[in-house]
Image 1: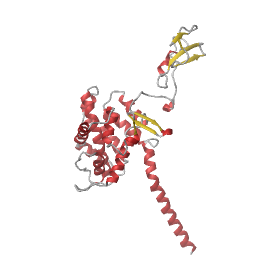
Image 2: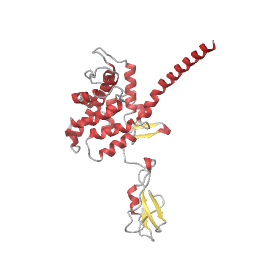
Image 3: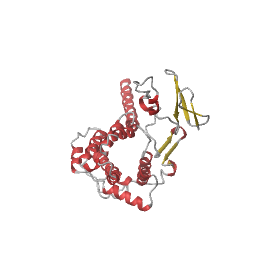
Image 4: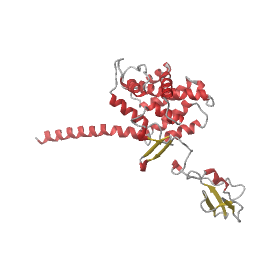
Length: 314
C-alpha cells in the first residue's frame, strides 16, 4: 500500500511496504524507490534531476562492490555460512554423488537429468568433442614455453571461424548445439595444449563418454590401455562440480558483457578465458598450486647453502 506525498505528488510507502524513500536535498524533492530482492534498480535514480537539462542521478560503484548485475536462479553462494546451491540443490548433496555432466545439465536446464537425458547429454558432449585440424595446427604453432591459458584463449576464439552458424544466437537449436560442443571441446583443448607444452604429440584418444576419465586420458594417455586411477577420477569429478558455476564472478561478467553485443558464443567464451587468466581470478588458483613447488625449491636451496657453509667451516 502507498499514499501520495503532498509536497511532490509522488507515491510514498506506508510502514512495512518494500520501498525506500530518498530525499534529494538539492531540490527538496523526495522519491520512492521500490525494493525487490534486497536491491533497488540503478535506473530508478535517473528520475532524480535538478532541472530538465539534467541527465539524472547515476550510481558509482567501481568493481561492483555493492551492485548486482543480473537476477539469477542458477547459483547461490554464502561463503561466510558455507552455503553453495546449484538450482537450489546443496553442494553436499551433489559433490561426490553425481557426475559432472549431470551437474552441468542441472545448471543449464534447472533440474537433474533423468537417466535417458543424462545419456543423451553425455553422448552430445562426446560427439562434438573433436576439434578441427586447423585448431590443432594453431596450438602447435605456439612456442612450448607459452602459457597454456594464452594458447587456450586463442583456440577458443578461433573456433568461431569453424562454426559460423553459432552467430545465430536467436535460434534455440543452434544454442542447444553449441553448449555440449563447448563442454566437450574444452576437455580436448586442455589435452592438446598440455601435450604440446610438455613436448608430446598433439593427439588425444577417442573419448569413451565419461567426462572425467576422458579428460584425464586427454592429458596423460600414451596408449589405448591407459586407465586413470579411480581415486583421481573421483577427485576430478568433485573439482569440476565445485567449479561448475560461481555466480557473477569476473569471468562470468566478462562473458555476459561481451555476449551482450550479440557476438557468437566462442568469442564471448574467449573473453571469459582472458578474465580467468588474470592473477586476481583463475591465476590465483595457479599461484596456490605453484606454492609447494616454490617451497620445495627454497628448501633445496637452503640445504645446498647449508652444505656449502658446512664445507667452508671444515
